Image (cartoon, rainbow, N blue to C red; front, side, top):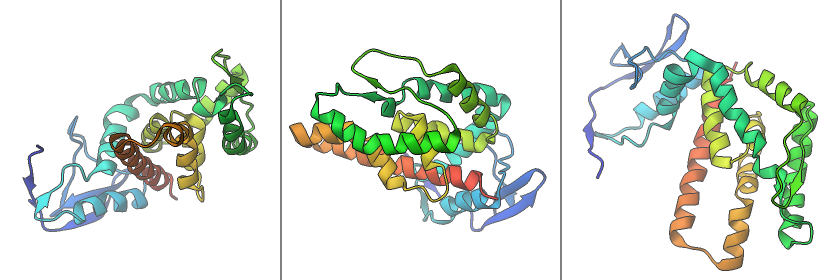
Length: 237
């Protein structure tokens, strides 16, 4: 059972500081939980998002209620020192991207994958100017070197906070294409999550729904939406 922490502050404010913005509790800037560094945020929108987490706590602090704070700390402590390594971690998700691997054409699942996944990949390719290889069956085929190079170059243009959120999105979706698409302003996040979970839903329809699996998928969906909000806030003007 997780230990509860009594609320120790009264006021939550957002302040302009050198290098960006900060959340302050009773006037004191928050530091990262890992390295103890000042938690300086790149946008006011992101600072407001983190401030909301602190503001909505009651007399007892819910330690699980800080997904944005956790991502911000990860961005500062782990991503900022080596954004190239973060981009490399993300590139692994394009090599095994769920949306690029289909069932055999004669299987009923293949048709649903085509109907749901192909429009997403086509839109992604048009937006990024890349080309992705689709594979049916179990044989692996690498993505074109030009596509990989172009995508990594684009990732390196993202700030450390957006990259941190993108890692969570890609991990939950098992797809870099879904992660990058949902990070676009105006994207249909619910539809993209449903696309990422298509095969799980297919299995549930075939074999029935199991309460624990459904609960786990619901929690992952909440995490996905929170990470999406974090990325959009990190990239806000």
